[in-house]
Image (tube, rainbow, N blue to C red; front, side, top):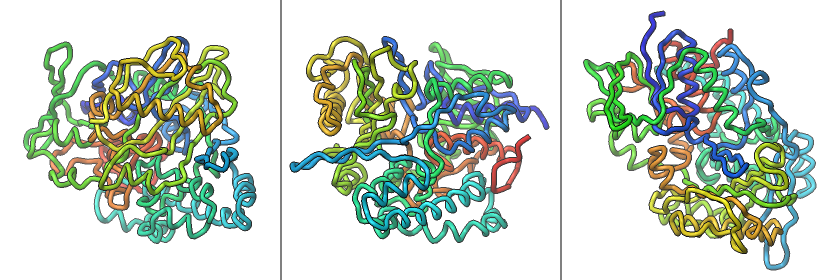
Length: 531
């Protein structure tokens, strides 16, 4: 193969993975990263002995990680120390005036999950077994025939694998996930257990296609794992593999233009240390926000989309992230704990509806990695990562830079950060304290940092400050979601959460493989053959 010069824009997971695969295939690869740290939204932050993951925290679809590592000549076992979580997570429901609900511990495995469902609703155990069998079938069809499929031409839709998988997939596309679940189960919490994975996809269970019931295969059948050292260890493995394969990684440089000539990509311009530089390239991969690439980095004639695409886009939620170092043990929380409000219609309408607003009594997610990993918090302390979904709106504000010290009775951070973000964080801490029965939680906070929608917009150039990218609605899923190869410029490719196949670390790894397939001219629908 001719040794081509490839430039990858963005040192997040998809950018690093793409660089690894292209370098392994013989290309000369340079990664340009805007920030000083690598990993993108899979970031990390350290303060006073607390080590926080600032992005993804669920390790799902382990076979996707294993496949990527094997393509690079290694294995997951060689790179990561994975710990199964059992129970997979705990669920707190919104307390009523009458009484607080006891928490629900959700264990992985079909038998354990069926036992839980049966304990709350007679007959639900057998119905769940059938539901999970369907989820597993849809999941396998998606992996073998759709997720790794570059769909380079309409002929690819008629391949034998795609046609064989179609009956497990197509009937589920027009039906909303929530309706699909509600026809089978009456108990609200059971419905929410099966509907909440839509949030992983940046969408509402009322809008996500029923196809995404396949997500329940991941947590209830396969189970949830955690890489010791946190997800920063996964990012470090990608950096190490990239460098071992000769990839040049340049941080602290902001790409300002992608140039073309005669219909083909030619160079990438970037700024570093107040100087402008140009890298000539045969291949350019944009592994950053697709909207930023299309509307800022490319000349109008080189853009694959019209402006109406962005006006019509249903953007996934943003988030207020709250990182807390807490004095003393918190047995009320597991490694993963979900807080579900009773009125999901109001929650999701606040984020996705015509009148967007901060949800009242939002459904929250809390990660306590110190339950599993002694290295992420000082002895006698806990590490909490709190995610509050909010509308994709940078005007909600920035978070604060973080810091330490006794927070007093409220746990408030002081004067840094925008007022609305601080208020959302304060309310979330109070909600966790009340629902989980930890009344002294605010007074035990010794480290606190917040991140707001404006931080996603400025740090990662995300469209509308979204934390996840386009929502996985029917019109924005699979091959409808975006493109891997530019329609206007030969040699220009796209990877990452804002394009095909979608949101999440496994999808970012798959998107990197789709780029490699396009570069090779490989139209096969499934994962590449491993060496």
